[in-house]
Image (cartoon, rainbow, N blue to C red):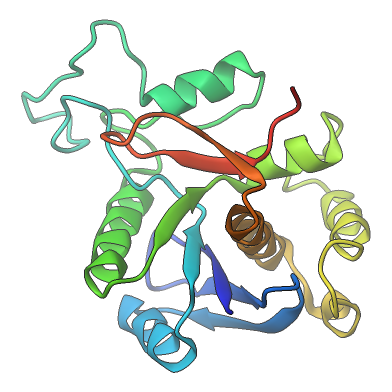
Length: 212
């Protein structure tokens, strides 16, 4: 079994990172792609059971796009984004709301198109959220992603979770850590060790099982 975790970038001009785990959460490889068709070729080669993408894969109910020039609007008045994002906010986990004019609009468009492409090939795709995974697994005191201590923090905590990670630790950066968190979320999902937020219509966010 192969599980892929993808840290997707908004543009093909900057490589996106892919981490592959096996059925024992053992690392198989770390790779990257620019064009989405390169990821398709990886799936043809490795036939993953699951692909976890760390970006929104759906739009809020009522929106057909995220363009401020379009007349589409939220089906529920005063909504800020998707239900999953409102649930994350109530949990105290920060996130970007999927809304018109979003600063991650291009990333959302790309992730949705990629998910549709992969699903059309018969592959199972889930939406992961690496920041939420970090908070659930490692606690509320996770350093900000761009802080100096973040990378050391993540390496120390990922090493016990991912078998065979040792030889790769020196080459890890923040993006590969996020891809690894997405892959690990996918692994947990195959073990029935996850919960989901949101609705099927807007897209569910998959997280490590939440405390009771």
